[in-house]
Image (cartoon, rainbow, N blue to C red):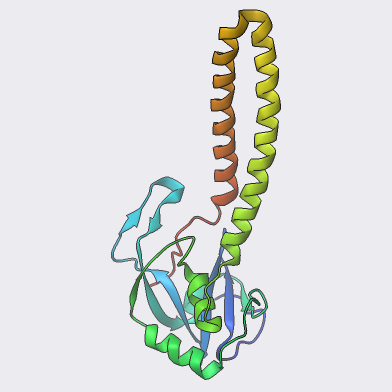
Length: 201
């Protein structure tokens, strides 16, 4: 059973700490939550490797103890403060109406965090996606700067060694290497977020 860090009340957002990401749900009372999760029975996914994500997801009503499993979880109503929270009664009614519905899943636009914030604030957002994008952008900028310096050095050597034609070829190779380094840095940053919300059915 997961470790509860705070006692939830109906309408609270519950943050569940998975090994590499946070899963989100709405507490509706009597130990139950409503959340968006991949439908384990369909097996419909897109991409491959670490970018393999479900195409469809389903809204489920389950016990928080079942959803959280052995993961720590707590009430977190402060992570998303861009808008005014809707009335609790409206949040609960809207959440209940969604139970059983199958939805398209999008890591960047329609994940479990988008689902609960949309119900609570009327506007969907995901801090995990925003943080990952910001971190990746910073890493790419740093790698790009380093690659540019390296490319300039290689091109200079090419001028002395093989002349003008050689410069073009060497610079092209350096550009390819820089692009590969940028992609590698982005994948290292974004990979912890790009996973299924693989929860108990």
